[in-house]
Length: 181
Image (cartoon, rainbow, N blue to C red; front, side, top):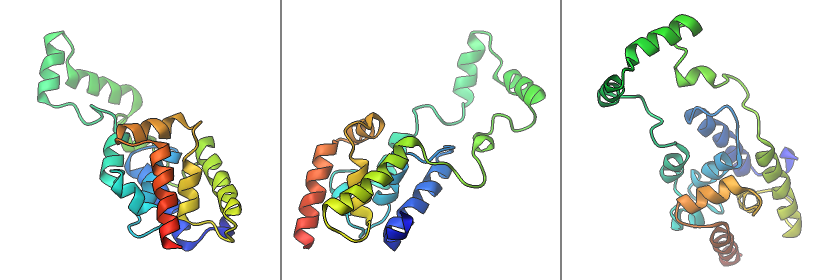
């Protein structure tokens, strides 16, 4: 199927893998494909996403759980107040599991990152979207249409966190494609 992808659509898939790595995820999901499209200024669908507030930085922020960063001195003090010595916890974890056991990058594979079933479904849907539009190739617009699966609760929730929804993205994309034709 990838032989039918345009160079731009292939780039989106590569960017999705890079974004998953940067976010310390060990999978490529539909949310990473969305982020890949949002990162490609000028690609079909990217302008619609930007107009709706789905920018690369907004996506990354929405995909990073609150409090996912390192604990600071204030956190250590708060834990200390209830009898938890954060330094001792870190030392013990490294003693048991090895140096760097708490490093987030440790859990991310260095090579190929697998697609989730949701992401695989997006790629299959992109082929169906291209066929439905009577297009001979699969472009970023088809991948974006493939992402807009109402059954994909995670991507739907991500879009809501970003202030939009699947229907608005679909309508905006279809209008963008109509205008370009």
